[in-house]
Amino acid sequence: MTVALHEQGLFTWGEWTAALSEALKAGGPDGAEYYLCWVVALETILDAKLGTTGAQRADLEQAWHRAARATPHGQPICLMNDPEAAPVKV
Image 1: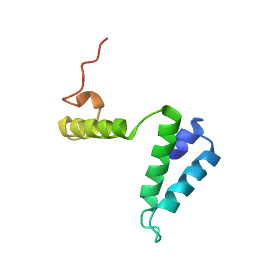
Image 2 (image 1 turned 120 degrees about the horizontal axis):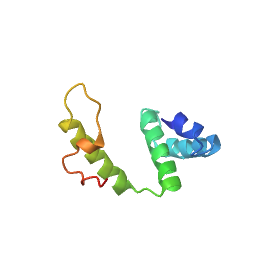
Image 3 (image 1 turned 180 degrees about the vertical axis):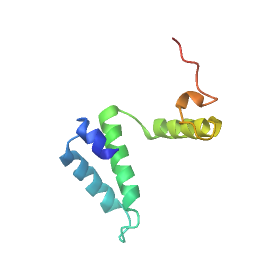
């Protein structure tokens, strides 16, 4: 996902390496949190570039989990399946 967003021009590779470097500095000394540092770095960049907040990401995560529970097995998860989603106006 990170590489795809970079390739789409959302951020430069220099911005990515700076964000990842900061996240790694804040992570544990043994590197066990390496994947989590990638997530934190990506969230940091997305927040800066798109103006998103941690609360918005948490809301979206909860919506995704509700949609996943409401999606029949074997079907793609779609946020429109969130039973708490507002109706879409067409």
